[in-house]
Image (cartoon, rainbow, N blue to C red; front, side, top):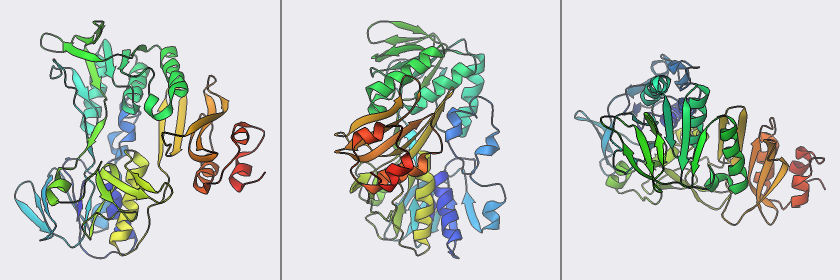
Length: 403
């Protein structure tokens, strides 16, 4: 039984079948569409450069061909660990031996006056991306609230579509919490250079309009005219089912390195899983595409009888205008950062390290280096920071531990 019709759920079904599981597999999803991947929703699909079907995890015939029962448009509403049953909206109850929770996340709502006006959009699912794409094309002024990944990617896409865009956020720079001040300033300049107006260090006090949104009122009284507002202020893991079932929940569904919850035979994967990571010796909850994909496959194999530790490094990517980046690993609050290359030129590699032990890396417009960077992070071996920044020393030499 797989509860959640997103990428993690689809990959769990795939992993179980690929590893030889020959029992019944039921995949339950609340959305009407079959499982799809989300990265394109804020990029190519939003800009009209991709067909919606290109986002589907598997083609139309995959599920029948692999004897996977897929139930779409019906959410699981109750999970009973004792009786091993799941209640599905509409009155159906399904029994199971083993279950995977992959219920994903939902966007945080903007809690200010006027937040329910027409013209206010959120972006999490396929339908929302398609509606937003149409809305941007007919809008004259777009305000994007939130300077994280969704906010910056939507702002870039809307600008590439020809919209007049203002990007609003409380931080001094975009993505400061993830990338730090210096790289965040580079992201801010990237958007400014592409014609985006920035309102940083700004809180939103109110959205105003007669019947639909017309302007955003900032906390200091400034007015941002907008006939379309996109809210991207983070997501909240969907934990209701896990809480109701009595599973251990702490910043997500707590799972071990094999992705098993506090209830034997119940697993969790994707956005909701707060999983113990052997590389970092702590639990991590990661809300990115690669985590859903790879945890899904691992949990599927474990359901099929394996005992595979999930040890893949966290990974995410973003494309904005002519800038592409990849982030590998997990930086801690005490990590220092050093850079190989020039942040101003938007072509560099940043290393987050603690006493020379590299915990995370970011490559920006530098390609075909991910394999070496993963080796460096996984090695947990101190490297002189001066060597990390010295472009004359090949990355593969650092990865091999050469001196």
